[in-house]
Amino acid sequence: MAEYILASASPRRLELLRQIGMEPWVVPSECDENVEGLSDPEEIVKELSKRKAQSVYEGLPAKAGTVVIGADTLVYCKGEILGKPQDEKDADRMLHLIADGTHSVTTGVTIIQTDRSGLHNQIKTFSETSQVTVYPISDREIEEYIWTGEPMDKAGAYAIQGLFSKFIKGIVGDYTNIVGLPVGRLYSELKRM
Image 1 (cartoon, rainbow, N blue to C red):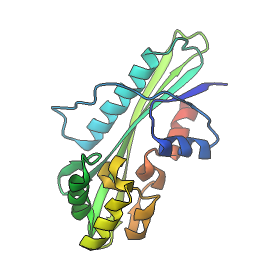
Image 2 (cartoon, rainbow, N blue to C red):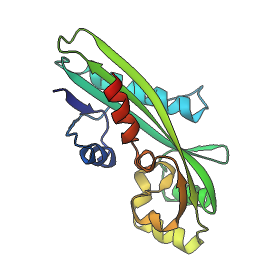
Image 3 (cartoon, rainbow, N blue to C red):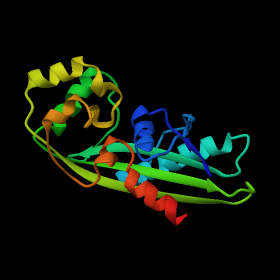
């Protein structure tokens, strides 16, 4: 049986993997996340997921029978890429931007799977995009949401699985992708490898 390693400190990604029966080791990546020169959301998340998985894989003492999963998620709205907010003012700006409209959430995933000998590996990188439509939100509601602290470590300044769910009008695509890891697609890709 393969040993799974999640190259992320995200508790949401860990919980999603546990929901599908995986119990990975968590080894957060410390790779360079500067993507200067890239502007396409899909290319950015694929590149960052690859860097994260590769940096964790290269740091492993033993690689035989290992599957490393790296992921990166971003929100794209009105021509702007929204990562994690830098502060409360930035969170306020992002939440005003996504309110009363539709935005996309893209997650890039890289899988590095090593055979039992530890000599050969397969690498697969893919991305998944979902559309999220948000109801109108008042200034007061945004302010109260920011006070909860929930938006501060989330791409786009919100957690669809948390308090922000009351503002969601609809989604098109994979819900788990919006949370941070498209587990259905991940499982399907793992079966093919």
